[in-house]
Length: 282
Image (cartoon, rainbow, N blue to C red):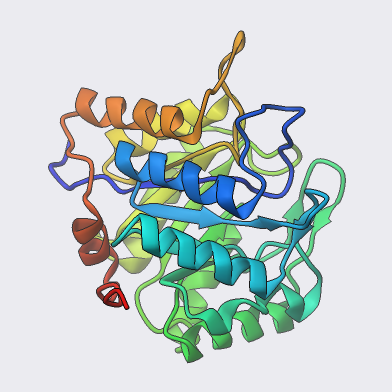
């Protein structure tokens, strides 16, 4: 048990879910901003962001990311904006084309792994370039660890100075053909982060599909931080679709109450992650 406030990250859209999967999935920029504001008011302090094109397909268009970032900063003052450099939205350096926008954070996958129908490729030269761009624009990377080797790689990059500050690692479990939601592995991940980055190092966990609530429970009860949202899971349970991102945030917040952990405010979240204060409103 810990009194450390729990940061709740909401992954609002992702690259895969559609309105056919759940009508609540926000696709347009306007829908995304509205959904993020509801999640922010429910307790989320990080918005993990993807954008879609006019047909609803994944995109890495910097202009769309700019509009989404501006909308979140306007309607959710203080919220941490984390832009995705994931491989489903683009290829090669196009994946980092939005980094000159200098968001607070960006996702960084430091190694490859299998996804349900393909290999999620993160070649070393691209990983090095993305990390360099994040350092250039003072963006804190969130290390997306789909495998133990990714945690070790993040440590290597930190030691080499490619990652400026102590890495913030997120365990991703439950992706088909990648790491399942295994409690023994999860516990070893936590042990490894503490061994490599320090006992007080903040970390996060994300579970896919029905594993979302499982990983929320494990992370919150173990002193970590939690990710939820419609990107990873469109259902409340087998029989009910999630009515909103906010509903999934409220479910995570209820676990915080169960384990007697306060939900982090945006100020606390920024302090825990060592982030700069938000830019003052124009």
